[in-house]
Amino acid sequence: MTAAGIITEYDPLHLGHVHLMAEVRRLLGPETGIICVMSGNYVQRGGFAVVGKHARAAAAVQSGADLVLELPVPWALSSAEGFAAGAVELLKSAGNVAHLVFGSESGDAAPLVRLAEALESPAFPPALRRELARGDSFAAARQRAAECLLPGGDAALLKQPNDILGVEYCKALRGSGIRPLAVPRRGAGHNSGTAGDGFASASAIRALLRRGEEEAALSRMAPAMAAAYREERAAGRAPILLENCERALLARLRFLEEADFAALDGGNEGLYHRFFRAARSAASVAELLEAVKTKRYPLARLRRMVFRAYLGLAPAPPERPAYLRVLAANGRGTALLAGMRRTASLPVLTKPAAVRRLSEEARRLFELEARADRLGALACPDPAAVPDEWRRGPAIRRGAG
Image 1 (spheres, rainbow, N blue to C red):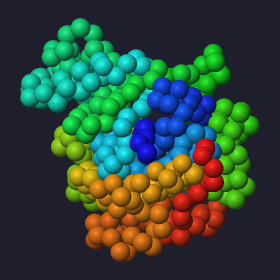
Image 2 (cartoon, rainbow, N blue to C red):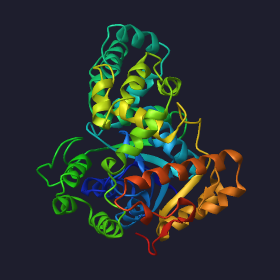
Image 3 (cartoon, rainbow, N blue to C red):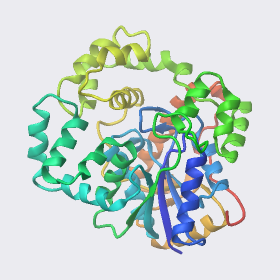
Image 4 (cartoon, one colour):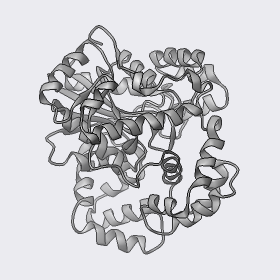
């Protein structure tokens, strides 16, 4: 059985996400399997997912997905390029994925493929260096450099967050045989509120939760996600908020030496000096970021540096993940899983204890994930209510969907 892949965070799962899964089956056929690669307890913007990964994965399977694989934390807390590369590598390794489906503002994969080819061309790095020398942000410099190589308006798509991620997916897919399929994004845009059709963005839902407007937030989630949130809330595991462990995070940063921050400064442009100085006195993460930020660096990049420092992550993720870890599946997902065990180029991990029989690289990656999740538990209302990752198996739901 072949499948379509979706790369996601579901932070939290909302009606727009459910719509995308329905579109997969409308466009590719009702029997198409859907494999989601989902960030774990940390997300790409630099922060905690508001609900734990096991609950989000179970809600996804109840909402249209068939199989949910975990994107390990080194890639989940990476740049758009690293995030896309790690997730696509998992889909490639599964051996049964024919399409990668994603929502985008343009809803058209063709210009995104052209942009990906331009960004990967030998002419792009010198063009980018020329634009960066003007002192603007990386995003603005990249768009101008792309305009030099690709006249006709395609480069304007680099202004839209979902199209930007789509370009990174197309870059990572080159030579894989997996075809990109862009679907027009429905509902409110990134960092927007609620659209006229009632679809709210994930950021708007998280903002409601932070303000304590839980019922308003729940009404905008997918029904299965709202039910999962209520269960996690009752158990003391949600919402997962930075405020719950801010001092623990700041304590970790104050312990670090300047060289530790230097290792995380991928641009080698002296940003680590600002981080080191600010971390010694900042009384909140917001204060730290305010002291460090400049127009050149997006806040998401700075937040990722904070969290990578908190977790002790390496400056960049490894070349590829070391296993395919299953978080949730339904009946069709278990059939996909059975096929993957024969075709996958990476070992399939369902029971955490089985990682001890895999390579040293796989054991190190899982141990890192488990440590990160133990630190993440400090952001829950009741950290003691969070089971250790070594004892968390996948949620298996009987039936096709």
